[in-house]
Image 1 (cartoon, helix red, strand yellow):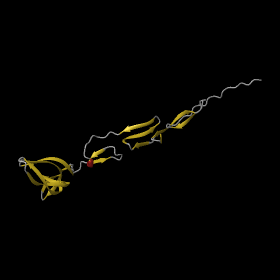
Image 2 (image 1 turned 135 degrees about the vertical axis):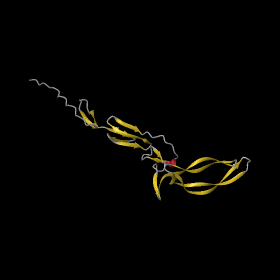
Image 3 (image 1 turned 90 degrees about the horizontal axis):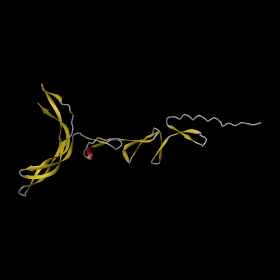
Image 4 (image 1 turned 180 degrees about the vertical axis):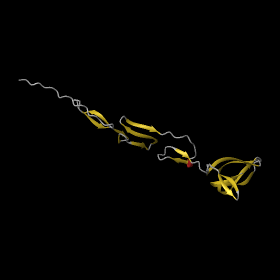
Length: 185
C-alpha cells in the first residue's frame, strides 16, 4: 500500500490596512501585516503622526506608509527690526508690526552751516485707513488719523559748524506715538 503526499495549498496573503505593510516571516512564504512606523531622532512614529524638529522650526515632518515626508514652510521676505517682528507659534516666520510707533531713524541735521548725523526717533506706522466724518456745529468735517508724536522730551544736540566751532541746539525726542486725528477741508 502506498500513500501519496501533496504539499498543502498556499495560504492566501492577508489583506493589509492602509497603514500596514505585508512582511514574509519564513521561508515557506507565510506573510503577516505589520503596522508601518517611522524612526526619527530615536523616536518611533506611527503612520499619520506629524511633528516638528526644534532645530528646524520651518520644517514639519509626517510619517507616511512610504516613509518620512518633509514640508518646508516658505516665509515672506519682509524685513524689519527685531522689536517689530511678530513670530508665528513655531518661531519660523514673522510679520512686521506696522502699527504706529516711534522707530529710530538716522538723520542728517543741518542748521546755519552746522551739521551732525544722529539717531532720532520718528513716528511711523499705519493708523485706521478709513477717514471719519465728524459733525462740528452744523459742519460735517472729514477727519483722518495719522501716526503723530504723543509724548516727547526736550534733548540737547551739538552740531559741528563749517568754521570748526560747535553750537548746541535742542530737539524734540519722541518717546511715544499715537494715531491722532488731523482735520482736512
